Amino acid sequence: MRKYIVAGNWKMNKSLAEGIRLAEEVNAAVEKAGELKCEVVIAPPFLHLTEVSKVVGKKVSLAAQNCAAEASGAYTGEVSAGMLQSAGIPYVITGHSERRTYYGETDAILAKKTAQALASGLKVIFCIGEELSQRDSGKYFETVKSQIENGLFQLSAAEFKNIVIAYEPVWAIGTGRTATSGQAQEVHAFIRKILAGKYGQQVADDVAILYGGSCNENNAGELFAQPDIDGGLIGGASLTAEKFIRIVTAF
Ligand code: 13P
Image (tube, rainbow, N blue to C red; front, side, top):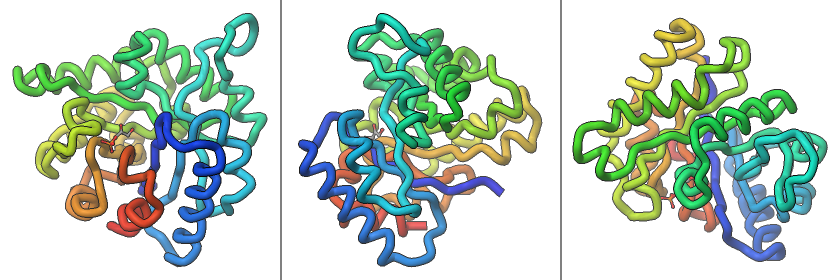
C-alpha cells in the first residue's frame, strides 16, 4: 500500500522566528488531530530547517526545497544533499516549476540533483507539470511524460521506493485556479501508467503521487478522494497552521 502525504512548501516566506512559530503551531495541530491517514511534511527555507527540527515531533517530517547537483566543493551558495542528510532532514523537493523557470533547472540538472539526494539517503519529492500553453494545446501528457523520462528514468526500480511525485500544473500554482479533480486524476492515472510501463505495476502502485496548485482546505477533500491522488504539495495554504491542518485531515 502506498503512503498518503501532505507536504507544505513554504517557499521563500517567513522570518526565522515566524517559521519556528508556524512549525510549532503545525506540530501542535498534528498532535491534537490524533491518528492521521497521511504523513505530514513541511519544507521551510534552508536557514530554518535545523531550528524547525527542534520544535517538531515524530509526526511532522521535514523537507528541503532544493539541493545541489554536486556532492561538495567550490559551489558558492549551494547546499548539498549530504549536508541535509547530516542535519537529519529526510526529504528534499526537486524539480519545482519555480526552480525550472526562474533558475534554469533543466531535466538533466534535476536528474543529477535527484541522484545526489538518493545517494545521500534522502527521499525525493520530484515535481512535474505543464504550463498553460501546453495545457491549452493539449500537450500536457507529452510534457509530463518527458519530464518523468528525462528526470527519473535513470533510476532503478529499487531507487524508486524513495521517490514521491508531485504533479503541479504551472497554471494552477499560486493562481487560485485549481485543476479540477477530474483534470488532476486524469494526469495522475497517466503518470502511474507511464511508471508501470517502465518499472512494472507494483512500483507504479507503490509510488505516492501528490497534487499541487492552489490546493486548499476547501478543495483538498475532493482532490484526495480521487483514486490516483495520494495527497498534496501545498504552497500558500501551508503558511497558516489552521488551513494546513484542515488539508492534512481532508482524507
Ligand atoms: P500554491 O498552493 O500556492 O498554489 O503553490 C503550490 C506549489 O507550488 C507547492 O509546491
